[in-house]
Amino acid sequence: MANKNIKSLKANYEKAIKKEQALSSLMLMNLVKYKQAKASGDEKAIEKFTKIAGQLSPKKKKASELANDAYQAYEDMISGLHSDAELQIDEVRELVRSVISKNINESLNEGYATWKMSFADMNLSGVELRKDKVYTVKARTTVEAIKKASKMAGLSGNAWMATQTQKLEKIG
Figure 1 (cartoon, rainbow, N blue to C red):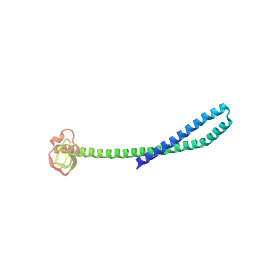
Figure 2: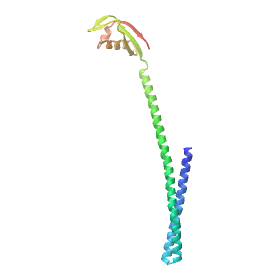
Figure 3: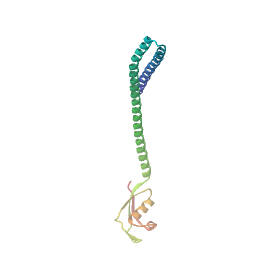
Figure 4: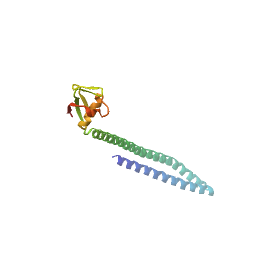
């Protein structure tokens, strides 16, 4: 529907311009004839062409105003469509960003599971490990779960290798 309105507004503008141009041409021809009459001293012709100029001048002014109004209406419609298109593009961009962000987050979390782990009672590197203390971690493998639980317990470096696992359970 907007496309039809644009074509209609453009046609109105072109029609108004043609009318304005036709009146401009008539005024120029009248001016040439007026100058010829003035040069020859023909008072009747001078009066006739002055009268014609007086009739054409307001018509030309009105035609110019109509052409300007028609152009403004056409320009406003195009600007409105441009703004609508930009708004739609922004909405699509936001949708694409959210889908990409969701897919990235899902990809990053893919393969991770939640693990509950407890160590056997022992003292290791000055850290007291107890079987009743349960550590919950997100990891891809059992080894990664043990490493993360060891770090949570306060162990550092490769001390995780000397731990004894009391219980390791994948919960999700």
